[in-house]
Image (cartoon, rainbow, N blue to C red):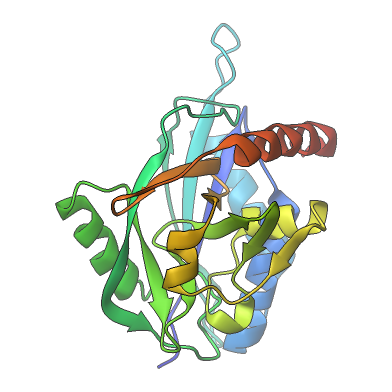
Length: 249
């Protein structure tokens, strides 16, 4: 069944949407797949107007950071319907977290591989169920697998595996959401390879990390009872910071 809407979650720092062009590109691709007319100017204006109207800047405070969540429900016969929400973030910058994330595999459902599986759309049942499962088991997130029993992604992150100093992430054919931070990392770190990843390979990995546009890069400390290191992930994180600072988004 075709999704009825798309979701975009944007980090806004001091009134500026970060990685904005990548967010717009993901929306453009999503509209194309859903076969709806795309108006970049309408979307850009809606986002910028919402930020300028609602995210009040106080020059006496430190740089403010917000998580802006946007749902867009396109319609062929009418204008796009926008639904905004936002919440304040503690950190304006991407910061290395010494505490890793405990994650577990979610095997009660499988993500279907279809035309819409790479979209960040409004039908998020499998991710909601998996995240609830993770929380019940005192974990931060859960890894979701596709109908071929290979890794797709996590509930709110894309997933990367380090093995023998090589970095891998699932290809789009394995049904991960096209994350904005995933795209940024693939664009700027050519050593990252796309590769199907089995649950056995996850347990045998040297390191695991996850990424999204709000939190940047977070290392995985545990997959169930398996414990991981973070040395190469930490080095990658600091290289990532240099790229982010040079981008001047």
